Length: 408
Ligand SMILES: [Zn+2]
Image 1 (cartoon, protein in one colour):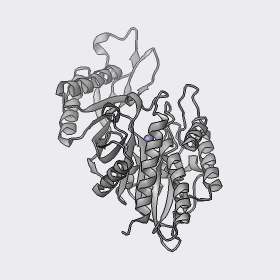
Image 2 (cartoon, rainbow, N blue to C red):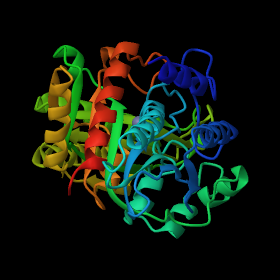
Image 3 (cartoon, helix red, strand yellow):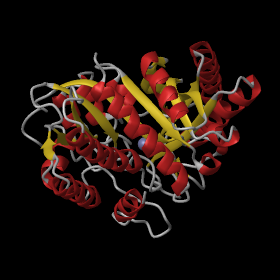
Image 4 (spheres, helix red, strand yellow):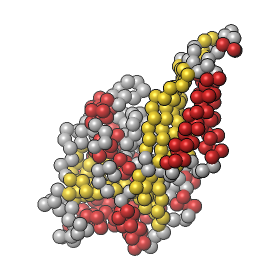
C-alpha cells in the first residue's frame, strides 16, 4: 500500500530528529506543521475537516447523511521527544486512507452504509509536554473538563489552551455527530506479536497502572566542607528509592513492569547538595493486587531509607489507572475479519495507555495492534515492516466497513 508508506514518510519528515525518529510535542511548530498537513490531506481527499475546542481534528465522510451516527477511527500525531515514526501516526494515517477508501466503497455500493465515518487526530496523547496524557480523548470522552485541560502547564508555565491558540488549533465547536464506535490501529510497542509470529492483535483490555510522583525534601548545603554526618541529601534518598522500586519488582518476580523515568533536582548545581528532588515512578501489571502490594512495599522501603538520611518524603501525585475491559463484541469482530483475511490473530491486553482507553468511557472501542520489531518504541529505531503495516490497514478497513454497514 504505497500510498500509506508515502504518507508515513511525509509525516516522519515533520519534527524529524535526523535519526529516523520524530519529536512532535503538542502545541509546538512541529505539531502545527503535522496538523496543517493533516488538514490538507483531509480536504484533498474530499473529507470534511473539523476541529473541536481541545484541538482534536476530524475528517468526516458522510456515508449516510440522514444519520447522526458516526464511527470514528484514529490515533495521535504528537510524539515523545525521542518518538518513533510509527507510534500514533500509523493509526491516524491508516485511518485517513481507510475513511477515504470506505467513502468510495459506499458510493460504489449505494444503500449499504448506515452511519457516517470520521478519522481523528487526538490532541496530546503522549503527555510529554503537558500532563496528563490522553488529553484530547479524555475531554472528548467527558472524563476531563475542557477548562482543566486548557489549564495544564508545560515546564515553562505555558498553558495548553494558550499553546493551542498559538498554533491556531483551538477549535470553536464540538463535532456535530453522535459517536457510536471508535477503532484505533497502533503498533504494539511490545514483543508479544513478534514472538508468536502473529499478524494482528485484538486488544481485550488494559493493564493496571499506578503512577506516583514523590518529593524528597532534604537541605541545601555546600558539597565540599559540609560535614558528612549533618547532610540531608535529597538526591541520595531519591537514588535509594529508585533502586528500591526495581528491586521490589525483580524480587517479586510476578512479571510487573516498573520505571522511574523523570527526575527534577533543586537547585541542580554541582556544588550544592540537592535540597529537593522529585521523581516520577510507575508500576504496571495485569493484576491490581500485584500493583498495589509491590508499590506499597516500595513506598514503605523508600520512607525507611529516607528517614535514615534525614530526608522527608511526600507524595505529589498518585494516579491509579484501573484494569479496563474493552468491548468483547469488538474483539470478536477483529478476530473474524483477521480470520477472513487469512491472518493470524491474538488477543492481548495493552500495557501502554492509548486514546482508545480514554474513549471507551463514552462509547465501545476496538484497539488493534500490529507487531513492533524487537518490541522497541518511544525510540527512533522503532520499526514495523511495510507488509505488517499493510496487514493492519486491511484489517482496519474491513472492520470499519462492517461497523458502518451493520444493522445495529
Ligand atoms: Zn501512541
